[in-house]
Image (cartoon, rainbow, N blue to C red; front, side, top):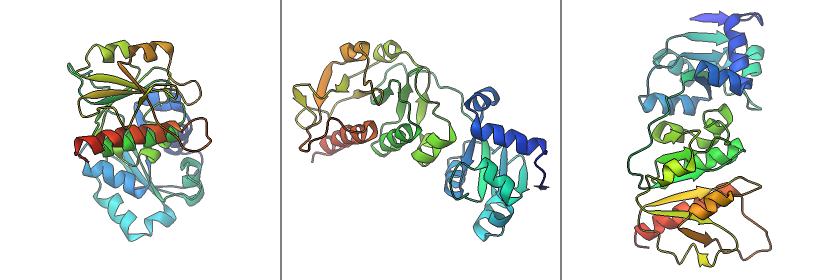
Length: 261
């Protein structure tokens, strides 16, 4: 195991670039997991060896992190000076341990799509991560992202999703028409002006949910593609809901109906 205390170390420079550059992550086909629980979840999912696992010097003094460094399947291990580690970590209080993983190859679109979420132009990493987490909790494992969406494997999205990535089939740079062509059930969009209500519609069958950009919403093409448009009723004086909140309401109303409640 190597110890790094120099700012000029090539591995440190690579980690700093990987932390701050989406281009670096895409070109290298790797990304960062920041934090004990994320790394633990990745290892538990049996998705392959870590490219690297590294701890800060103070983090390595924690028994749980030291054990993770020793036992996690990794091709390379390192200990970093605390100040150098803080240059890589994107959280205000560094977690003390991080890992580099290889991002999975983009899966082939299923021949017959039952339940799925399609996201068009989602830009906020926190929103995307929250939707991924809700989708997994609701039992929806197929996720499709348009070309204009934020990179699903950025560290901020991964942190917000809390390990959901490791159990989902995430398809990026997807055209909506390619998803619609394989749909086995309803194509559902939410719209404030829709006449149908999310709580009175029949959501028990297969469905692909369409969720749009935080500001602009769904494109006209996506709205036309929807076989069903539904509104989420709001009692308070607010113009709209956050997209992650809307997605959670829709997905769990579907769960509620399917459980017969």
